[in-house]
Length: 197
Image 1 (cartoon, rainbow, N blue to C red):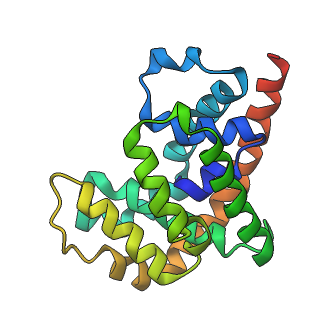
Image 2: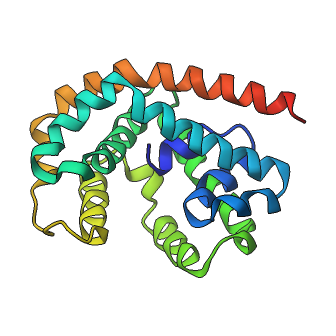
């Protein structure tokens, strides 16, 4: 899953920090953070493991794999954020806006935990309101282009966004089949984390 899902599937401010921090630390470093941030790191990994194994995600990858092969998962992650951002059974439009603002505030208040490259990214994320704008086609196009730009072995002009548009109905069904299971898994994982307090 991508930034919106990881932030939404956090059950405390510290977990939000840990979910964003996970991609920027070595495994052995996770124990140097406060417990709730460690829980966010654990939650991020649990979400990724569950996502990678889910049959609906395997189906969604088929949309992108002819174009990007092993990178298909990254484009599925971005796609799932689009469907989450437009899922009003999970949050209202004002609720999604408030969630985005809350996440930026929490991350800015905890910048001491993050490397400089994340701080620069957060400025862009907040300025363009990535989390809220995942609901827009242009927001997803921008995010997919970012993935292409960062990938070493992919041509920057691969039409992944067109594939997203052409197969939106299939990807929507994959989201519908997948996200309730992920939400239940995240809640169960959080309950286990709370038992460790």
